[in-house]
Length: 428
Image 1 (cartoon, rainbow, N blue to C red):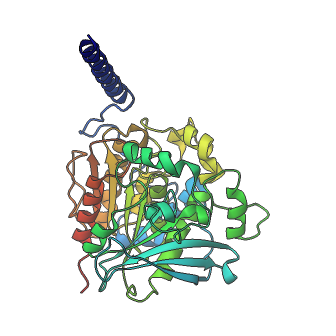
Image 2: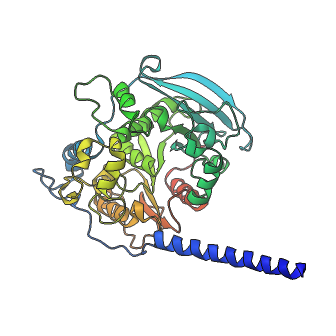
Image 3: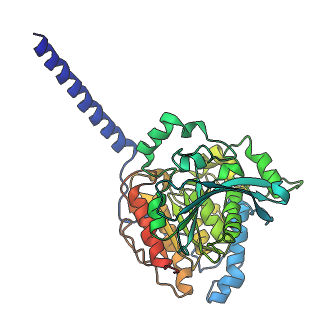
């Protein structure tokens, strides 16, 4: 009898597990519906070559460089991000060598404490710098979400971020994030990246300006300096500035002189990476993955996170004026295709997931389409892709959509490296 009871109990457990699996599947499909691969929706407006306010249409490359690009940069600063902080002297205040377990032979791993202003009085950040042997193809500067300890999979107690590790990045929550967000949401595949010929720098942007509406204002005021009107930019402008400043200080390091700097960012860090490159011509390329509203996706798009929603929850990321366009997005003078156009002719890869409707892949795709005429003005090939999931990584302006939701997967890093390989040859 006990044997039969055991079989019945096992059967009930199996039925319960199957039922739970079906329920999870139904929930997943309900809350993360698949996005159509064919592009739909109106084209980005205003056309990037057309009139902009009182400025006449752009006809020549000189029109773009001398006239239109400065106007767009100023408009994006006023209406979306705010101006970047002023350039400050930066210096390495401390240097710590770390073990290179699991990295290729000859690799070097350091933690650098970088200070901005006199002795770091305007801000500091701990930066992990990972180098292979020889001259790298490029230096990929990554802003992470959980700090340096997590970026090295908590292998070394000496590796830490000045702001500490957020509670949602510890223990079970960190393990859960890998299930939900993919294999590489916080720690990139360093061995793979080094073997492909790149150097990597990682920083927790919260060291400079916390991602917290309560503590960010004081950090922004310190970084920008005294002003009766307060800081002219939000947290995204400060994080964008951090890409530029780190690119400058790190390319003075032995073995990195002359290395092209790639601004890599996922989600909110992708927004900052785009704004960084739009302001800094020394950033040689951008990977903005699932950057969403205020990033690669058009503000004038009906899909994804709303402007009202993002500014209610994260208004301190932007200039206050951005929130005023909630509910009247059609009236915003500037949009994200013009942001991407400001990076031309440098390589830009926009990544997305086919169940990440919150980040609005179609809106980002239309932004890339809208930026294409400026790349053509520079003599680059047109962006002719018609399916979101069929990228051409050989073109300097590229877009892809892979299966899945918001996160960073093995497939994503394969795409990132394929794109970079196509545009940044080995330097010997």
